[in-house]
Length: 235
Image (cartoon, rainbow, N blue to C red; front, side, top):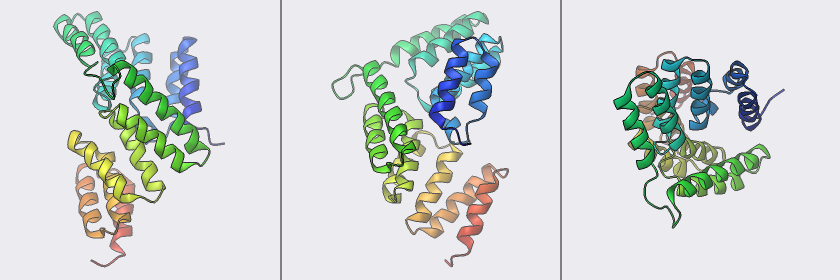
């Protein structure tokens, strides 16, 4: 039985609340590769690892969450707490300062923390629409989410995927270009960028993109599969 991303994350949060930290992590492990790219997932993994006294692994997860969403106040705070417990006081102070600074300027006339919460709420509503097969409505919700959280790269990635599913590779390409301008090292975004190019008819560009991805991640079989598909179409 296919269990939705929302249900798995919800189950993980419930297990965390009941102090079943291993169980929460198992729920998160059941997510597919794309769903694991959400900042919330890495943040929750970081919290579980913190409670299991696996500090170094927790810091790694908080760092991954912040790479996806640099304005994630809770991730900055929890990262600072772990650093403080490790006696890395100077780094902890920097993390706490980053939490304050991450609030940033107002967005769309709203205080940054409020805008961030609303962005995540629009994203959650978008997932409900997506699960119901209402792709157009899901795209609308994610567009609102990204407008309120322009630096939330995980939400922008989900928007790009929905645009591809909805048959709009040109718009998806624009969103992926924005992500890659900020995160050029994000291989998954580059893979999707290649797909957007392919679906938009730029087969040669798609090949170039996927070859670059394969050079960085030769272990990803789907990149080889994508290249094999593109090879069937002449230059």
